[in-house]
Image (tube, rainbow, N blue to C red; front, side, top):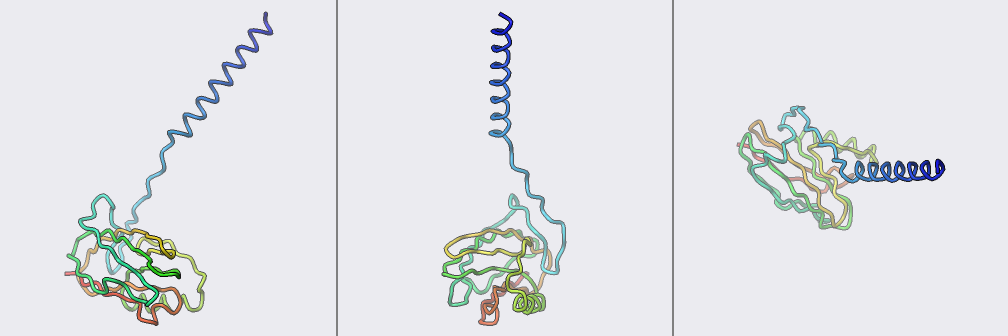
Length: 162
């Protein structure tokens, strides 16, 4: 009798433990990504919930961005949907011309360097990535592909923020 009760109690405990463990894992929420407060000369990371418009940017193995010129309103948060239509890796990096040139030189010396900045989208062939950026200052800024050789081949676009 005691053996039967003990076996029943262990079975119930095991079943409850499995149900709770399963329930916790199944309903676990992913941690929300924090938005960086770092201010750059060309703006700051934007909140995806507050993007005022979406801009599609295509990248090709002809070392070009389409569109190659964009006009943005100062203060606007833009969601960039960046598509790599080529067969090699491409990226879209926002910045000033000086920053992009300096970074392109660094990438020539360290081609396997990895990045995870909110103003960069690294896009594998045939894939799409997104980034949201808030343009807090007026001026002329750029976007370029800093994969070694691509920037030098003319893979650059211009952003005019008014």
